[in-house]
Image 1: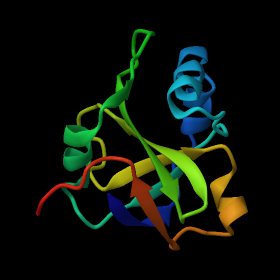
Image 2: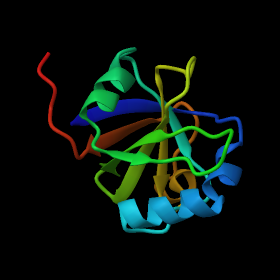
Image 3: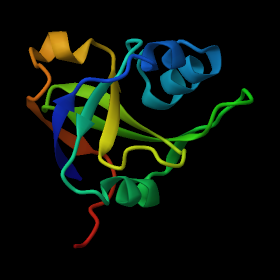
Length: 130
């Protein structure tokens, strides 16, 4: 499934979340790479994209600490260059246009992108008929 999104500034909480032992362990196990502690945040035009991805996703991060939630995890490729994972926390009122991306490299630096730039995601799930 191909998705285009626009890079947006995050709130800076993902670094701490990704460094939690059980999160780090599950990401390495499921993605088969060590993610950098931080996410690249993008927004998509389709307000139903998260709903579609949640339906089609077959993998999850399963919380192991009280006060945390599960998250959908989808493997993919960003800009046809780097393996990545898209994380969608399963919480109410989460921005329906936001996708958080992890990779083994710092994506903004490595891809030479800034807030407002467009990126391409190729997610490893079946296409959804429109």
